[in-house]
Amino acid sequence: MNGGDYFNRNPAEATAIGAIRWDPDWTAERAEAEFRARLAATRARLADKYKDDSIEIELFFRVGKEACDTREHPGTPRLIEQLRAAARPVLGQELAETGARAATDLEIFCRQGGVATVAFGPGVIPSGPAARGQPGGAHSDEEGISVAGIVRVAGVCAALAMATCGLAD
Image (cartoon, rainbow, N blue to C red; front, side, top):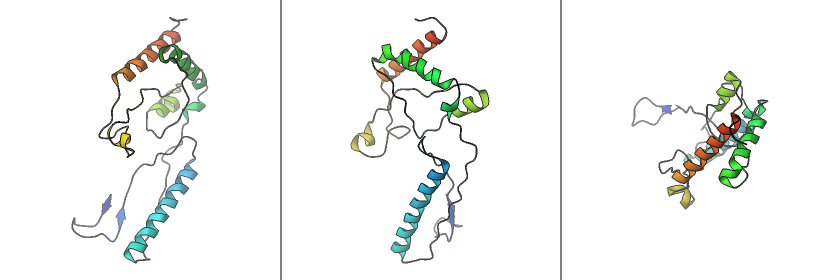
């Protein structure tokens, strides 16, 4: 966030720069439209609150690189099936394929290295704010992961490595 020339003066203009993550089934166009709608609502609230219809909010939306859906790699479906097969005996249940608003290096491995990738790990324990129905969870101040969850993930990863190397039935 950048605005104004001194800490105790209200700026006539301010700039916010950031990253927007969107759901795996969204397009960049849908993310932009959703964000523009939110900004329009914010602008309307500010104009009403300050009785100032001259307030402007502009959005410059840029996708810095082509999106890389790692599911499009030809080896990913096989990797997903191998992971599911390795997880069944360890977890005692089927893994569901899901998506998330997350930033990982998986797309770099996929695009640059040509490697099939999949994200898998322990679920975040919703302690603290998330347990109270407030924002929280992954990468929040009160994030937590159980030791049992880490042990289960390690067991699945070991089973997957053994199966991939031909060391398990």
